[in-house]
Image 1 (tube, rainbow, N blue to C red):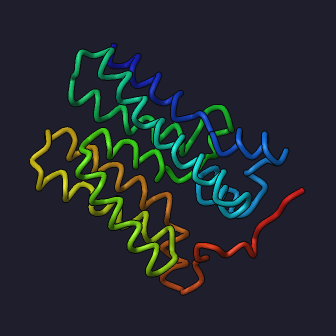
Image 2: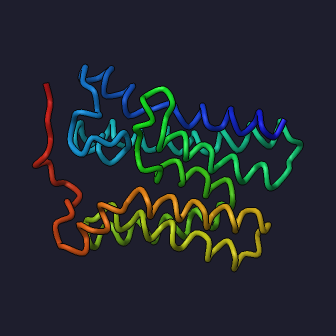
Length: 201
């Protein structure tokens, strides 16, 4: 049942709401727009706040749904529960339905963080929002979130499976953001509200 739950979690994560919403609203493929990433930030840049927020919420829900499904299938096994969040993030980042080309997993990570601890989710989320408000760098806020998350989980004395899983998802995020990190260091990272790379049609 654990393996089944993880497979289901990966498939849940592989559903791209960014692709589905942009196709429905504008008849475009999000992979050929803006940064090419299938996620909330790129949707925001291409279609605006409404679709961007919708993708953010739906992608976060994928993490919670995967973990909730695993909880039911495994009778509450904490390790299976935690790792299913990783599978949901992996599905978002490398979706089988879209040639393994997906997003960066931060919205889904938000859902997983909420599944670990509402307080950890709140603290990490507030830190990320403050960072984005001050710097207007979504990528920096995302990295702040995933860096803080395992620290808060450790301080809150959550199950060890939650701590190790949160460390792995932090590594996931840094790997997916390697270009953003390079751009941040070079001072060339795009800021929130920058639509210079917006393409429609």
